[in-house]
Every structure is written in C-alpha cells, then in structure tokens.
Amino acid sequence: MKNIKFALLLVLAALSLLWWWADPLLIQGDTYFALRTLAVNYTGVLAMGTMSVAMILALRPAALEPLLGGMDKAYRLHKWLGIAGLSIGVVHWLWAKGTKWAVGWGWLEKPARGLRPEQSVELFRFFQEQRGLAESIGEWAFYLFAVLAAIALIKRFPYRRFVQTHRVMAAVYLTLVVHGVVLLPFAYWTQPVGIVMAVLMAAGSWAALRSLAGRIGSGRRAHGRIERVVQHPHNEVLEVGLRLDTPWPGHQAGQFAFVTFDEREGPHPFTISSAWNGDSRMDFMIKPLGDYTRRLPATLKAGDPVRVEGPYGRFDFSGAQARQIWVAGGIGITPFVARMQARTQDEAYAGAGAGAGAAAPVDLFYSTSAPDEGFIARLRELAAQARVKLHVLVSQRDGRLDADGICRKVPDWKLAGVWFCGPAGFGATLRDTLAARGLPAERFHQELFEMR
Image (cartoon, rainbow, N blue to C red; front, side, top):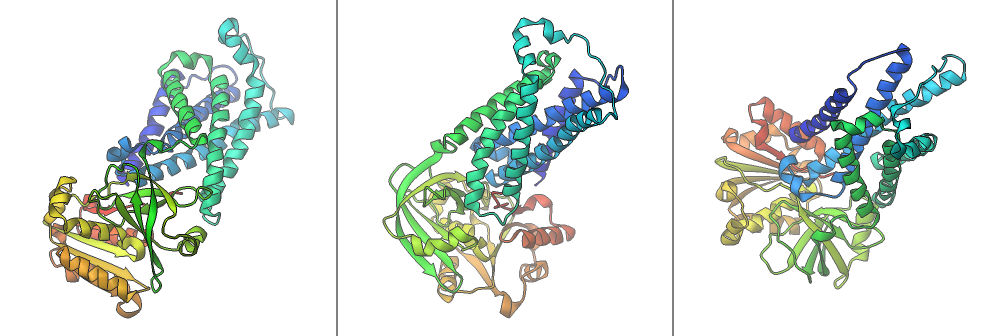
C-alpha cells in the first residue's frame, strides 16, 4: 500500500510543481478573474495528468509490477487516480462554469481581454478559434465521465456491465484530450509542464486506442481448452482445469491471470491454483461471488475454448525470514494450494526463482465458514507432501480466526513473514493487530484482489 500511496502523491506533486514552474501564482489585474484563470489551469493540468496516468495503467504494464508491488496494486492506483481525476475535474468544472453563471446573472463583470500571444501565431490561430467547441466537448465529456465512474465504483452494477461501460471511458478520455490540447495555455507548451502533458496525453491516447480495439494484454494471451470441471458442493468452489494449446511463459505460485470463458462476458481475474511444470496445464478455483461466477457450474464443460492472459502479480512468497505464516480466508486458499504444489517440486520451483523462502517452515491457517470434507482432505494430503503445518478452522465450530490464535499456535511468529489472502476487512484487521504487536509492515504481504 505504501508504494501506491507514494506513487499517487508523486504524480500529484510532480504535476503541481511543473505547473507552478510555468505559472508561479502571479496574480495581475482583477483579483478574482486572475485567480480563476490560475485555478482553471491548475485543476485542468492535474485532472488531465492523473487521468492520463490512469489510462496508461489500464494497459496492464507488467514492467511496473516490481515498482508498485504487483498488478493488483497497479489496479488500485488506477482506481485512485480515476477518483482523483474525477474529484479535481469537479473543481475544474465549478471554477469554469460557476464564473460564467455568475457573469450571466450579473454578479460579476467579465474584464476586457487584450490580444493573446497565441493569436499572433498562425500555427495556433486555428486552435484558438476552436476554444468554444473545445469547452463544450470537455463539458459533456466530463458529464459522461462522471456517470461511467459512478458505474465503476458502485459494486451493485454487474462486472459485465462495468467492463462494457469502462471501455467507453477510453473514448471519453480521447475527447478530453482534444479539450486539453486546445485549452492548455499557449505559454505552457514551451515549458516543462507542456512537454510532460504532451507525453502523458500521447501515451494515454495510445492506451485508449488499444483499449477500444480490444488489444489490452494481447501480447500476454494464450489459448486452450477446458480439460475438467470439478464442483465442491459444500463450499461452492468450482475447480476448472485447462490445457493450453499456445505458448505460456510459465507462472509462479501466487500469481493470477485474466480468464475469458465467454467472449461476451470478457476477461475475469482469477488466481492460478496450480504450480507450473511446463506441461501446458493450469487450474483455477472459482467461488460464486457474483452473477457470472454463479452461472459457471452450469455453463462450463470439458472441451470449451478458453483464453488466458498473464501471468500477473507479485504475491510470490519470497522472503528472508526464518519461517512463514500463511493465512487464507475462504477462497483465499487458492494461491497457497499452488504454492504447496510448488514446494513438492523442489527442483522445478527453485528454477522458477522462488527466493530464500522456498524451504522455510510454514504454518498455514485456513479459515472457512463452509467446509467441504473432500476438499479439506485433499488439502491435508497436499500440506503433508509440501511439509506445511495445516491449521483448519471452521468458524461455526472454532470461532473467528484472529491474531491471538495465530500467535498462540506459532510462538516465534515475530521471526516470520506473513502472507494473507482473503476478505479485505479480515486482512486489514490482522495486519494492524500484528503491526501493533511489533511485526514490521514489510513482512505482511496481502494481495488487493479487486479490479474495481
């Protein structure tokens, strides 16, 4: 979380500094209208800059994963940048429209303007003549952006509708680029802020065009077919085994992929629940958490085509600590299943770059409210093979798992690194409690597995 908070603040601070360098708060003439010009320019730079970075992150650039801590963190930063862009855009809109309303109502008198520098330059004269059109385009694009952002943030909208409407966001962004290019002050283009904004908007436009063409992640896709579908009725987990027909770069335990079972539905992110051993097979364990995943048991069958994009994520179990503690809540057991499979393949796993944590002693806490005896039996067998000490807690029988229970079961927990996958609230409580007891923040690893 620290990485993405720092990245968000860095984007805002860098854009603010570049703007101040180009327009250092020199208020001349009528105080209100001079201040209004500064506010409109500043909020415009911030809004377009943050939305451009968010658009670039929508490409799922795997090269940024080491810096941000994984693609899940990149998506969280994408979300925060979108919210920041919307919030700053509201302020920008209020300064622009509010002043026009006040002038129209007779509350303010618009000062006369002299000749602008750009009006004497033939190259830019055409763009200056389009200011009114650009303002209208930007205003209506902002309204549509606000609606689409609300759909993305309100979880009651189905994921399918979110994906469909979110793609429209790319077209909205392109219209906002037109608005920004025409209305950015002429003097800014000769300053560092203009150069940076040009680069950001160009890169964001490229990302938007790839999104509209359905090309996001196209270089990381593999195609195959479903080999088996196994349902665990008591915990409602669906196991889906795939065999890929096209090359796959391999994956580490803990990574996830975007899986497309239905082209109309689009890709959904699922954690890979199997280690990679080069035989073109991989498994996923899917919990019915929405309308789409609830339909999968009735719609998936052996032989169906499937597309997989990835792998993504940095939930990789590497660490220098003397031991590891894994905590899984419900379907959060998935990455730990893959990791235990990897531990049974010592040579293959070492070759995959597991790091110093490959042979560390492990305690795995699996908390579930819907136990499936067959699934748990397989889990115990796998844990024994992987030399992992398994603690199964059924919430109705054993109560809720908490930091006290973990610390009692693992007396030397302060020497361990902790890996958590499960409900976000559970993870936050566990992280804060262990931190209060002295666990360094960098030893608590949690995947932010939310794509919206």
